[in-house]
Image (tube, rainbow, N blue to C red; front, top):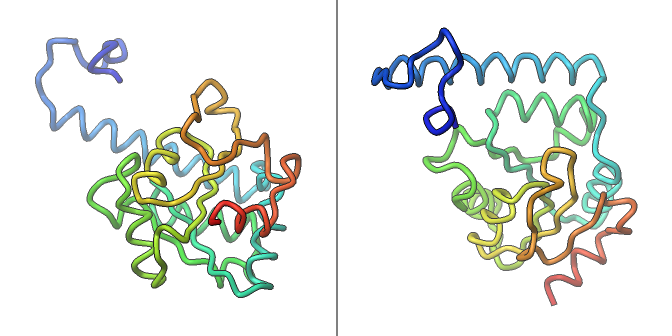
Length: 183
């Protein structure tokens, strides 16, 4: 982004070629953003998306495996799942984070790793996503994908999604909805 639009004033000149320094800055900013986000989650200021806990409970009740695939770090994802869904659910959810695959979304790597580790056929998996890069990753992995719109991605185009809803509750998405996508 900054290579295309210019680096923040006082940080680097546009003609500065020190890629190592730039990468260090980006890494430090990302770590700081993750710390701030984790603090917000732990203070209860980031709610679970509507319908997520209900759908997870339905899946568990039917013996359907559940995983979370994210571009974030394992620590950040585990923290988010534990605080938003509670210990009992978190203990049963497999987490596959961006720091365990070579290529992050929109590459399918994290979804393919999850399917392999959970001994699942990717074509029999349904992903719930909220971004175009996640949708592209799911489809590249051969999986079905439902998009729940988010404030961060409301301008994105989700033409290749199997279903698009505002959220899982308003869209009446339940386990039978997910199963219908596999027919």
